[in-house]
Structures are given as structure tokens and as C-alpha cells.
Length: 307
Length: 234
Image (cartoon, helix red, strand yellow):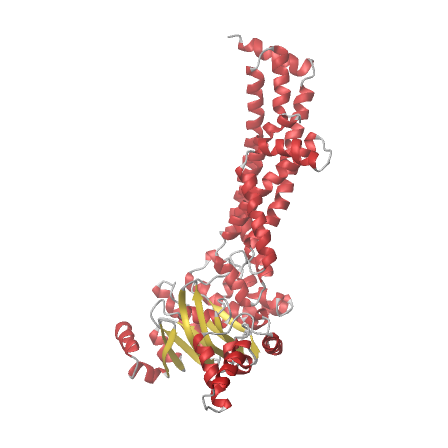
């Protein structure tokens, strides 16, 4: 349902993600763990484009939400001026390879050495445009299908709890106020906070804020929920109430990607655990294998510290 | 020192000889320049603030942003008196536009205040937690809608009180408009002073009028801040 294809993210000279790929299927609960600075939050934020990947593509179902990355499309590379020049030169040299072999070698060389330039000829740009036109989805529409929960909750401070929850459904999904409020109350009942409907975010505890932030995202009927360290900013006694809501959500079949340090949650809920370090996914597995038989040395080291 | 005698002579000139009309005219000009100037300033300031806070991913915006930077640097970097003189004696005559000195003052004060107001608005918007924008975007709202529905309403609470301070500055700065021949409180009171050969009481009176105006506005701002803070808690 979401595919992340070979994304790189640079902040200036700092490379935060170095080629991350991930297929997320419907109903999966993926937990991403790793030391701080490993790029796991950036990876999550690239899924709904709060960060724009420097290279690579993100697809939501059959819709492309990032620009086209030419390096991911061989047919695009093949019509570039750079490829044509290299191919002609190699042909003239006569290496004895078949055209197909030669072609593959040159594509690999172009990818490896990042040889594509801004201007690669008409045909190249036309094809890039075509691929984009055929697949691109406005990011605002894609985000309506991707719920996100932040470490710092980010409830709208100028709106009441009820308005926080109904703003999206009313303005974006064009629901009637009555319908949106009915749904909001139903969701608030689910987390036991109906009595806070008219409160403002400043009047709530961290745990309450985070549960309401989850509900705000759910009110949009998302197909997938992203959680960016949802319990890291909470007082210890409030972590449980938020995790309970997330566990219930997982049990209801929601597709989830959770960046967290809560290993217990990962073991209990995850269908797949990813370990990230230095901008790469170093290991991924089902939780039972992941926690009992880690293969990667850095993962072993990490687990020995956190478990 | 015959203080009460001085006050008597001042009152005679002010009321019996009709100098109060000059004072009222000066007062009217001061308020006109400050109020209309602030309104123009808010219009220009809003425009510039928008240019300065939106993402710079478009060459037109980048050029506008540079222009706005130069504009703000000029109006914040030169005294308003210099701006008035440049406007009145150079800019408008060069453009062949004939304007009364009062209109020139209103315009120049508006341009000047636009630079300050844009900075007030920019910092007001930028002081809103970026997480608010991210949360709006993550729900699926576009940049503009998130701005209008979420960020600006919160920024207004930072901006309004500071705008009040800007208004106070404008009121006080109007005391330089006589450099281009517009009637203001200084003109009125120095007229009284020179007709009596006594400047102490008129200038004290002038100071009194300024401070009363400023205190009144300060009171209004405090009231407004209280209201805004009350709406925070609810």
C-alpha cells in the first residue's frame, strides 16, 4: 500500500537517509527502532512528505507522491543524452558484449556514479513528464489517507478538542458538521475523553493530548497511521494510556508504522520490526526472530543496551 | 520664577487669542498621520510579511523577497525625518506628483510603518510552533489554508499588542512632520511660545498632550492583551 523506493535525504551536507526502501502492506504493523540520529524519524516523515526525499520515490498505492527519480526508471535513463553518448562510445570501442549487456553495464555505471545532469534532451524530459503525469497524486490528497501522530502532539492550540477533531473531516472530506461531530464524540468515547470535547489543548495532560491527537488523525478515516515517537515526550505514568490506544488500534486492523523506543510494544504488536542506523535499514524481521536471534552486530549491541 | 503668571499668559494666548485652533489642527494631523499611516503600514506590512514567510521555491518569490529585504532595510535604517525630506523634496516632485504636505506625511509614515509592521508580523508568525503547520499539512491542508486557519489565528495574539506599540511610536514620531511644513503640535505650541516670548509652559503642555495620548493607547493595549489571554484559557 505504500512503497518507499531507495530514498536518500540530505540536510545540506549531512546525509540522514542513505538508500532506504520499504514495502508496507495493508494491515502490517511496522515498528522502527534504532539509536537517535539513525534517521528513523526522517524516514517516517518522508512517507507523507513532511520531509522531501533528496532522491528516491514514495508511492501510495498506485500514486506517486514525490517527483520522478530518473535513477529508478531504466527506460528514462536509456533515453538520456548521457546514456546515448556512453552507449555510442562503448559501441565504437567494440567490447564484444551484446547490446543488452552493454546497456545494463552503462545503466549501472550511470546510477553508481550519479551521471545524469539537469538537461538530458527532449526525449528524456518528455518521458519524465509523462511518468509524472500518469502517476502523480497531489500530496495534500495523499496525506488525507495517511494519519500522523507527532512526538509533541501538535494539537491546534487555537481550537477546542472537538474542533481539532472535526476540522479535517469538515473542511477536507466535506462532511456535515453534525456528522463530523457525531464521529468525533464516538472516537472520544473510545478513548474515554468525551468530557474534554470543549476543553482547549492547554488544559490537557500530555497523555490526553496524545490520545486526542491519535483520534484527530483517525477522524479522517486514514488507510495507514504513522507514529513518530508518540510516547517519548510523555511522563512515564502516561505512556501506558497512549500505548493502550495504539494497541487497540492495531487490533482493529489498522496499518501502522511506529517509530518508538518501546520495545515491549514492538514485541507485542509488530508484525515486522526494522532496525535503522546511520540512515539505512540494517535488519528487519518478525519480532520473535528480531529480538531473539538478531544477526547484525550493531543490532545486537543496541538490543543489549535497551533490553 | 513667576510660574502662575506664565500659565496665565499661556492660557490667554491659547484660548482668548484663538491659538487652540492651531493646537486642535496639530492634534488632528498627528492622529490622522498615525492612524492612516498605521493602516497603510498594515497593508504593506502584511504583503511583505507574506512574501518573507512563504517557502522560497519559486524564482518570482525569491526576487520579491530580495526587494522586500531592501525595502525593510531602507525604512528601518534611515530616520523618518530623512525619509520625509526625500519624499517631499525629491521623490514626489521627480514623479511630478503634487501632493499636500499632510498627504506626503501620511504616505511616508505609511511606507515607514509598513517596514516595521512587516517585521512584527513575520516574527509573530515565526514564533508559532512549526509543529502546528506540520500537523495541518499532515492532515491534508495546503500551506495557505493551514496558515489561515491555524497559524495566523495564533500569531495574531503575538502581533496585536506589538502593533499597539508601533502605533505609539507613530504618534510620537509625528512630531517631525513640521520639517515638510505640515501643521503639528510642535508648530502650534511654538507659535504660542513665540507670541509670548515664553516657551516653557507651551512645551510642557505639548509634552503633557503626548503623554496623555500614549497612556490612553497603552491602556487600550493592556485591555486587549487581557482579553487575548482570557481567550487562551477559556
